[in-house]
Image 1 (cartoon, rainbow, N blue to C red):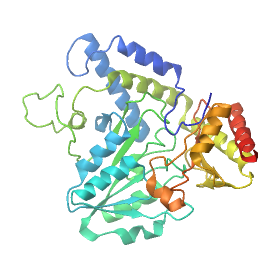
Image 2 (image 1 turned 90 degrees about the vertical axis):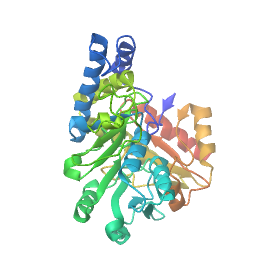
Image 3 (image 1 turned 180 degrees about the horizontal axis):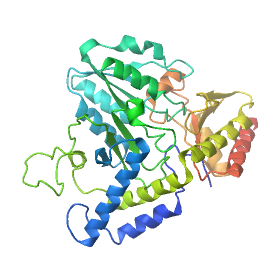
Image 4 (image 1 turned 45 degrees about the horizontal axis):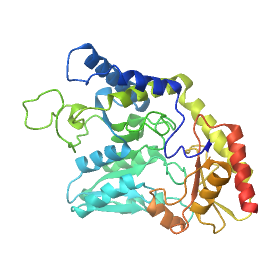
Length: 378
């Protein structure tokens, strides 16, 4: 199999990730629920993982709060920061993990405006100031990079806008965590939501939100924490405030191994390899007659994604042909990004997304390019 659907999840992980999960399955107790060795081992692992994530994103470790994935983290942030009567600005690039919580917020009395994308998928940043609603506007909620096109948002620009107007900045880093540079303090990010199973190369079921100093998020869930058990309400202190119930200690052990692996290699090294492979593929297929690309495949800072269509061919049919004929795994369809597909005019056709990871190879990339060309010429 040639696996090029890494924007959905990375299948190939560093060997240490599986080893760490297996070891934890046979040795971890419940973090924070006992003073015996197994419980303390789990607690130490979870704490060290907080430290690694805090170092990666420039966030205090005690404000790194774990969740099952970025969707859960985004739901926590959106439900916990805003109230009826508030107004939020977002963009047409968003994944449903942002859109659906925002639509629910709107149905409960909030207001949402979306920065529009044009037919090429470019966001109209000049329109951003015109979406402000004086005292009502509370935040900008946006992705760091589109999961459909791979194009990246200039978070420094958005962060400066938010600081100027006293707004919160909530970022969905599902496609970029550990890949593109993220400095919450420098970029003015108040809440960063991430998942562990994509570019971080950790297990599924891991993720979380990093909450900047001075930002207070109301808990979405309440329940057992192992501390302050006689309180009727959730503890106020981070990270316990946002971590009701038993954490996925086994998955977090795998995430810790993945973070150690990435730190040893270096973010720049990983990004250069993945973007290099995406660019290699693009250069081999860009002259196919009738091919259409979505996003700026030549941008220097973006996710390692190439999304395209072959003429008017249904994206699902193209993906099926690549799988059935060559065992090449890609993602067709809507990619949970309905607003951007409408902007691009691909709502019915969908699009075919190729995406790379550290474990992708030049040989696989060349084979995928050759297969796409052969399919187009058939």
